[in-house]
Image 1 (cartoon, one colour):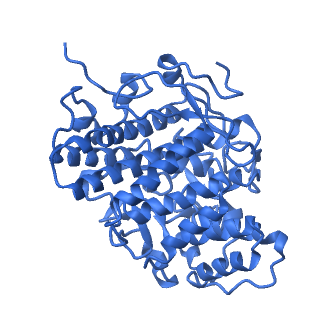
Image 2 (cartoon, one colour):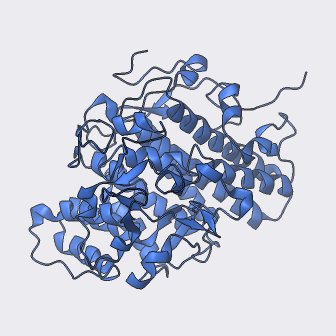
Image 3 (cartoon, rainbow, N blue to C red):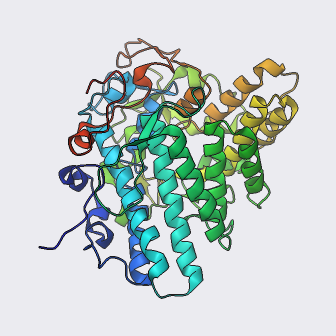
Length: 467
């Protein structure tokens, strides 16, 4: 009987339940010993691995919604379609479908990346395309592990990475693998990205829709900041800032999110045409009508944006009532497809904010404010001055909140810096009842390990979720 690899750290049924394209890609059901024997097979597998990132359960929709609903930018309408309630209330359990699907889909991307990484060196082909394929696969694996350790483990800062992380498996095989510490997960991510930078040395800033050397460097900057290695974060962010990208000017902000490939983008997960239309599951449909329209913008966030802030154009009045509720217009659609969006996973604005935060941590306040002012100038805002040193980090986080609203950053910005989530718009009749404060030290600040994983790989549960 032939043996097939169909999943990693999760039951086959759960992996098959993850929707759409990737399930028909050959790299998810290749026979052991016959996998990826030539460059076309490698490139087909790489396309399938990018597709894993695009799943509804991952960057296609759920990952950003789960993180945004955990923070203070949005609220879940009392009139809702019964989606993402557990994320807004932070009432996950081990059977939660959104949590289990995210876990399985991220590991599905890792499985595909492992297959490429472990196969490409042995095929007969020119070295440069082999290097590029391996570098892209290393980048994807690092991205998936970074997202998993953010969602399922406490932040590195504060305990020096000693807490349990997630299982790290580098094989294209279903094996029982214990949880690595957070520190060890970060070591793997940093190793993968460092290797990816070298392999992608000839892939420059013009490449937006595949990993490039600068995508690897930008993700390294993010990871170093989360790890607490502030100088390394500064160095990587500076490398990208000096690479020829440019910030989108204020006049371009209203249409920035409906198009892809701009000079600000470092890595964008590109959705194209009807082939990648998720229909009612498109990201924007959770915010907009027609669509589910379940998620509304917190008045607290709306009031932080000055009238002359170009980013305020990305907020509108919700369309089906007279309550004055605000809605997110970032993800209105592209190619005339409502709610469809190509997530800009890495862009230059983040590099300025990473560098600014790292400078703030290192008590280099003037440099931190200078980077904030560079960004603010392109958003139509006056330069900051007279900010007390003790307040600089708060200014950085406030700017990041506005710049990356609805893009999945806010929750991790707060947790990384040991700051509780405080929802100033809370217990209103317009919204689902949920905690007004989520403590960074609370068990509910991270997700449970899915029961589907524990059934096949008994790695132990996160505190507060039983066993």
